[in-house]
Length: 460
Image (cartoon, rainbow, N blue to C red; front, side, top):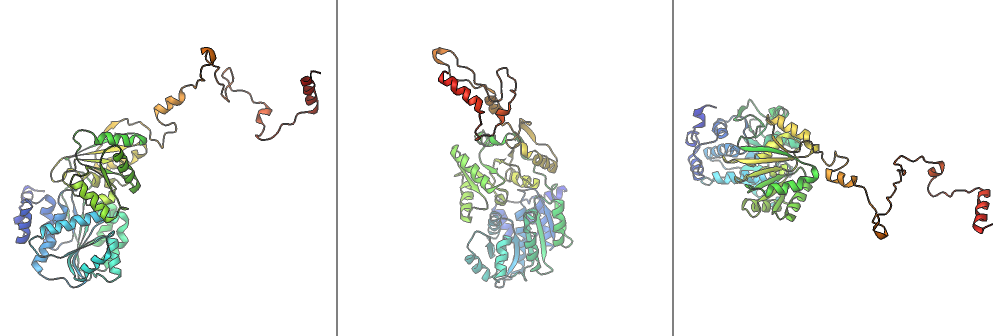
């Protein structure tokens, strides 16, 4: 990108005056690189594939042009219709986009509706009945309302797929195809994401017509302001390592990532027991629970948020000092999204990953994707619990110590216990046929031997 583009002012982009006032009220004068390129392209009504690192202002880059279109047209939406549709993968990201629209439309009249799962459908249906300028939705709940006739997309002129790679990668492809089939053929399609893997790019190509490709940074490369490292640790030692990290100097506000919902709850509970206030956020939480957890984290009532990958989409908080990967993600691109929760708004941040023996291949995939090796600390050769048959070194030493009997009367040590498989000389005993007898069966004693034994007992 040339220097003249980087120095573009918002006033030079052709935005309507009410939007410029809103941008100025937020304290912005110079657009980010992605904004400086996407805004003019959208104002020119082009289809767009936009790739930019997380935290670089992607949301404003498509929200501002959508609002500008509404200011120019001055048309009111028809009942049960939406002028523009923004599809997002998670409820949290939907709420973030809605907040952004409210911020930049403060000096304009714009109607919006938030259609997401986990919330009562009644208020959503009533909002859609009036018609909305911009509809922000997750695919599942949108399809529910489409199936009942609560909303129609035949007059929708623009669709934005935010976090497009995640939308497609999470299995939303069939739903997206069905939704796109309901839109007019001449619609404008915009795909925005922090990453765009080659297979996802091939699928996304079906949705766009001669798109303008805008990439302000190499795809899937985290920003340089993040200090990244990895700690090699056994799985059973991860909880202790996590507590030690969170109690370290300079750790102010942290997001801890787990792979599963149950894992997030377990980690949050462990941190609470360790005296570290934490809240968990994942797909099994109700919308109210998720909103309360995020509000507590944003307001500083808790400084630790434990989250899964999907739930973390849309967490836009500028003061996250650390991201800790308690478990490495199965998809390497998710690593970029995770650590992008820190070092936002031009600040620096720290990302630490805890890697056990079973996650080495995931770590290699991440390092291959980002094009660098993470700083390794800890013991790279330490086996994980799953792959180690003998457990930790401490347990091995414990089992290797000989067992002693208590001292016999008089202070003298008692005799050493013979093991079943050891003879007095320390050699393997030779088993006789009598030792191989099956348990529970009575041995038959010959009659002559029985008579001889009886005579000895009687003293005969």
